[in-house]
Image (tube, rainbow, N blue to C red; front, side):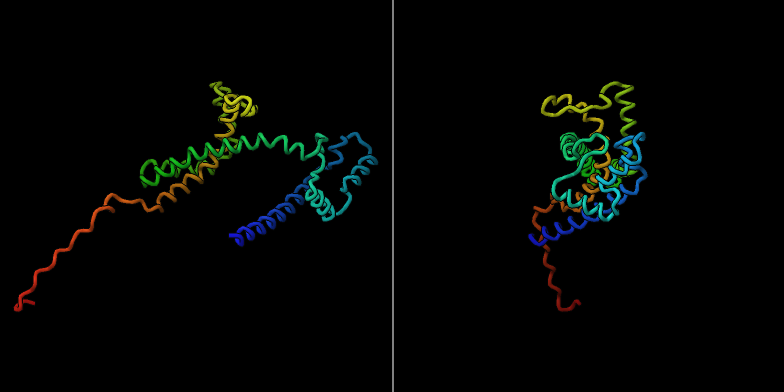
Length: 232
């Protein structure tokens, strides 16, 4: 078990390293100048060049990545170019919203996926099985942003049942938090429930369910009548 955890930890570190390299490179290759974003288009070239030197943007991209990685490992995530606030404070400020959304979406996915998958496995080739397969395909194929927009148009603008946006902490206003989380949780939960439905169906099919005849004794075989000496 310890060896397995060690191997998984090493794999996680390697994956995170290569992922950080890819993301850092893509961000640096995106058109745009961070100095111009911070200072605006009316800044002089001399001031922009000074900001680039202070931010290390005049260095090669390998040097920039090494400096960034050293700062991240030390707990320094830098400052936002837009809000001029520490990036770590912005991440921690949005963390409760993210956790509440992820938890509610996962609950929605479990409520949809497990019953549908189990019933589809118990009734193969029925309309429930075909419906769960169709739901899984639609859940994977439909873009989440499109589904979210459609839900907002229907339940917020047309029916006016739910708010189109907003966030309320669960510990301050539970009912309001549930109302504001229904639409985004269902939007993300459908995408999560699609693969879980087929996975739970396959797991239910592979499970050996005990039959009602397993407790019955095996029928005794009647002994064959002895053959007469004249018969073969």
